[in-house]
Length: 227
Ligand SMILES: Nc1ncnc2c1ncn2[C@@H]1O[C@H](COP(=O)(O)OP(=O)(O)OP(=O)(O)O)[C@@H](O)[C@H]1O
Ligand SMILES: [Mg+2]
Image (cartoon, rainbow, N blue to C red; front, side, top):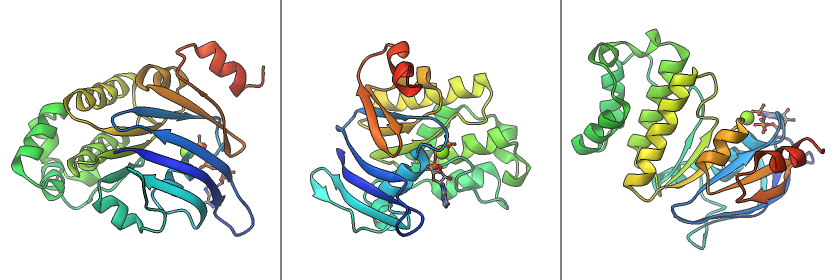
């Protein structure tokens, strides 16, 4: 699934644009990173792409078709998933019940369980008894069970321990090797984004200030910090 953003502009209040004309393309099967300082508009861009930003102008194209007027639900139905920290989890269900609820088939569920390697005690636990990091892992599993073709991840490692971060990226990498998945990855950790993505975009003052396929962190950080 190819994603094209054309001059995406907008924000939370009329007349107060956070995004100032974002242009970017994510080719089918590519992973493209969005990096930038706190408050640079990364999460706002994720909301703009999934049509959950109150004021948005500009074009969103999926495989060449303009989907800018589709609702968030319609975008989700065509295979676009947004993962946010503390994503959708049912508190009064166990981990396994949450997974069952999200899975379209037993094969999908088995595949996800083979990626996440959850222990049986963990699967039985009620979701409201999970730690922040455990809840985060469950939310990611639920998001992946929707079988997205385009996955937008807003800081999938925020608040996770180094081990859980490694585990999360191992799962995402594994998925990319198994199926054609297009990823827009918002990541605070520049080296992680550069390592995982085919290309990274630096967001600054609501526009893409720098886009590169280079793995040279120094070059990216120099633009990021105006050095
Ligand atoms: N719900 C909201 N209502 C009004 N303004 C908001 C809202 N959410 C974010 N903003 C503003 O939009 C700007 C961009 O915020 P955004 O959350 O997109 O940044 P970010 O790059 O994701 O930052 P971080 O790295 O801290 O997650 C900030 O100035 C912020 O104050
Ligand atoms: Mg953010």
